[in-house]
Length: 290
Image 1 (cartoon, rainbow, N blue to C red):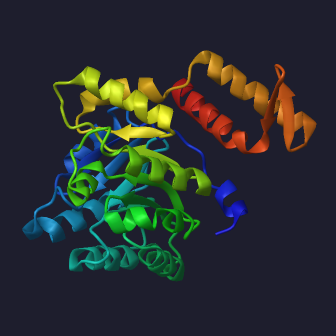
Image 2: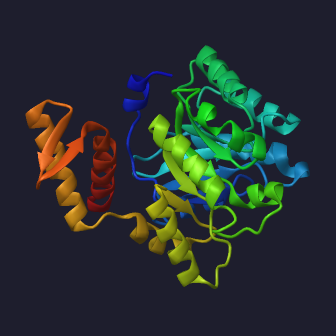
């Protein structure tokens, strides 16, 4: 994947996401209206094996009608590509003329999985984007190569629950800091957004906010939710302040006027790679204003 292809990715807010069960399409509009930046229709862990086919059919039917231009990103989480259910999901997506705008790939272990799906989508003529969950030891070891293997990838997601089980460690910030850092590093190197795992204790709103603040300081673009009542607080953590928005506009304007690789603002040297984060800040500002 070239640097140019990374630069042409659409920048958009990814401060929060929530799952909507594929088996219950009536919940999809409610999820879209929850205030989240991403709604992910669930076909994987949240669906029992006996219901996989029905969930797949109902989920794909959602996209037969044109989607509203409401600023909410729509994703379908398919099953692992190393399993029969995942293969069936891909076959159904290749068959339809109205594929989901994006797919979330769970339990990715190697770049080959992503490249294979990319090739199949390209052969079919689907423009579907990809989001990759890093939640296995093998995936963590290969995360840098995974992040760079396809220009369809828009974001990496950190799957902390499965990762903690694989590492045999507590599902807590400290024990998972190394794994989180590896995922952030790979995403940054490839120019991708990176989304942290949901906070599972619904009764501990303050704990969720504190963990979201830690995730933001580490470089995460957003964090998942398990309930709509978490979304407002998550959006607040990952929303830039008015001062940060004004600074982003100033930096972008200065670079555009200077037409160079670095500028000096307020006595500080700022290099061009920082522009991606500045454009992301403005994307969030546009989402808020709309």
